[in-house]
Image 1 (cartoon, rainbow, N blue to C red):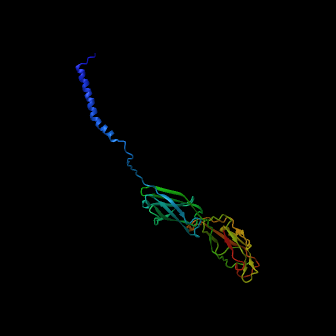
Image 2 (cartoon, rainbow, N blue to C red):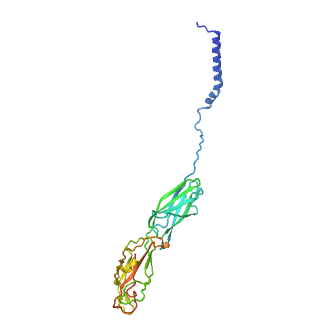
Length: 307
């Protein structure tokens, strides 16, 4: 038989009492929780909360009305772009002042369009029209339309893939259109007009390479006696004013290219020779057989200059 001392019994009893007391106080909530789960529910509500942030705007339509058109001669072409932008947060969330529309081509100055907001297409879609100007001398070919726009939360959209074609244009103006020599004598040589030279201004965007300014000449027949004439092959034409009478000899009714003479493209308002060329006609010989009278192109037709 094991003997248990009094003091040991006291300790054991105290431990048991403490453990029991702890369980009795702490387990009340624990057992209550399990008593609430009955196992009888077939559905239960669950609340949820999701916040959707700002939506980025996007472009749904871009159109350029001037594709494959040229500017007026020595004028401008107004290029009109129509742009539709959509914002799921409403068109009034678009920051219209941030709309930037550029027209660009390598080698040319970028054009910034002037834009105006039109009536909204619907509550989420804005409609803008933008206009930029291309000049007659601007390089023909494919240009690019670039559009960027932000909303009021600074979210943005950008498009750089809308090309359009600026058309090729070949035109020029020439002055004077009536050359006069005044009075010369039969047998005279190397006589230039009183109002020389002929000046050509390039009023398009074509580049006319050397030798492609052409002169189609005619005979200057006597107005009183048309059997007499200063023949076309008695004339020369040159690009060099300092050697005006040392140019290419002309042939009647044949397009004759003027060596070296050319026309670049550019802004004529500079008035510095840009996009201009001067050519110098000359009577190489007035035949000794010519009688005293007026000689002109009235009968055989005017000379023609072409590019």
